[in-house]
Image 1 (cartoon, rainbow over the protein chains, first blue to last red):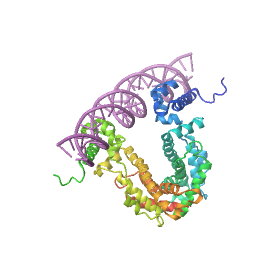
Image 2 (image 1 turned 180 degrees about the vertical axis):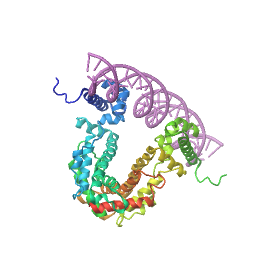
Image 3 (image 1 turned 120 degrees about the vertical axis):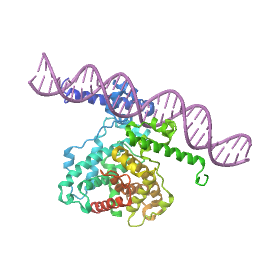
Amino acid sequence: MTSAAALPLRERKKAETWAALHEAAASLALERGVDHTTVEAIASSAGVSPRTFFNYFEVKEDAIVGLREPVLEASKLSGISVTADDLVGQVSRLLMAVAWTAIGGTDRARRRLLIAQYPNLGRRHMDYMVKAERLVTEGIAGLLAQDPAWSVGAEGFGPEEAARMLVMIAGVPIRFNLSSADYDPVEGISEETLDPSLTLLHHLLRKLS
Amino acid sequence: MTSAAALPLRERKKAETWAALHEAAASLALERGVDHTTVEAIASSAGVSPRTFFNYFEVKEDAIVGLREPVLEASKLSGISVTADDLVGQVSRLLMAVAWTAIGGTDRARRRLLIAQYPNLGRRHMDYMVKAERLVTEGIAGLLAQDPAWSVGAEGFGPEEAARMLVMIAGVPIRFNLSSADYDPVEGISEETLDPSLTLLHHLLRKLS
DNA sequence: ATGCACAAGTGCATACTTGCACTGATGCAT
DNA sequence: ATGCATCAGTGCAAGTATGCACTTGTGCAT
């Protein structure tokens, strides 16, 4: 029973505690409702103190949904070509990928059920988009700064400003999906649902610019 | 002393309580710091109970900054021409106007000082942009639905979807300003600072579309 | 003027959230 | 193996936020 331990003990226990808290939170919320599920109950069910709960999650809802801090891997970033045609599309897909890293836990059906039943759980996804955008903006700013076509800002704006606004624009299709009435947390952020929104965005950009 | 009473007694008292709470919150925060200012102290200084405080403000920070629910007047909305050239600019300016209605209180210098000193106070402005966008989206959706050029959605999207995304795009320059490092709460949302950001947006839209 | 509907304000109970100081287990260097 | 630095976890205290039931003053219709 030593083979599967790719991680040091500390890391593994941390992951186990996270999973235990998420599992407890999701199953309790499902069976007795979100607001009849106290942090106290979640923590006790996971075998830790309430104080520890808040070392893992900012708010109760995050534990129920299973949200983590998003991360941006360097390899993903280096796949971006700032001179290519569909830069908005590229950045949108990058944002989507980063947003996905914020979603932990494995039971997709349960998450879908919970968010359908308690819409304000879904609103936390939007909050995590802000975090994802922050990460991506940093990365894109780095890329733009290296490219001659972008590094000299027109109109008195530098690459940092361009990156910030570019990522905001690229975030629109994703925010659009997240704000749809029939938002599905499982399929809501995916290539299939992103593409139509991206098309609408391009359609509007052409119409408006 | 009866001449200035344009409002019924109830309304006036409500406005007075709001002002008293805001005044107490802002001045206490300024003199002893935001997190040494308790709701208890604010309420007591304004002569109401702590429970009443939360009938006026969602969170402590809103009382300090002086934030209210934004409103969209019908007259503002009817000034929009959905067939005009600079639709994005029009909607941006409308959003800005609505965002302004969320800012109460009169002491601009104090607000600037407080937000400069405690950046997370400024983040509440961004939250109120969401409310402003919701209002404007509703209104714009109504306008688009009446216009033949928009009412038949291309690509399987209707006017509701077009409005949602249009307003998101129009919100970008304002969010851009709000997220600037040197964001100034007094001048940050104004024609002068909106225009350059709007120019950058149009610049990018042309470059990307 | 009287009575009624409603909204502001309150007290209480409960729960969420965070800072701080402390403990013990882990991992690492020697 | 031993010692040490670090980090997960904890208990406690304070403060933030919300639902509910209740009181009272206001505005309005009769």
